[in-house]
Length: 88
Image: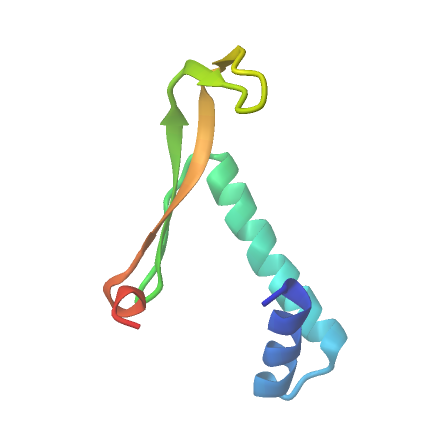
């Protein structure tokens, strides 16, 4: 499923034009993006939790050449599915 599919589903369910549905979907994604940028946790009951976590530095390896590559520390987004989603 891609973003356009989500927009179509929202437009059908809410019986609104696709442009308004696209605006609603974009607004939700922007709010989620901003919350994650600020390090906040997003909890969607029955679906799951998005969380920003620290990624520690380490050493990786190029699978083709075997050359070691330094992995820099940073942040990453993790998703933990909720109970209802796990049970599907």
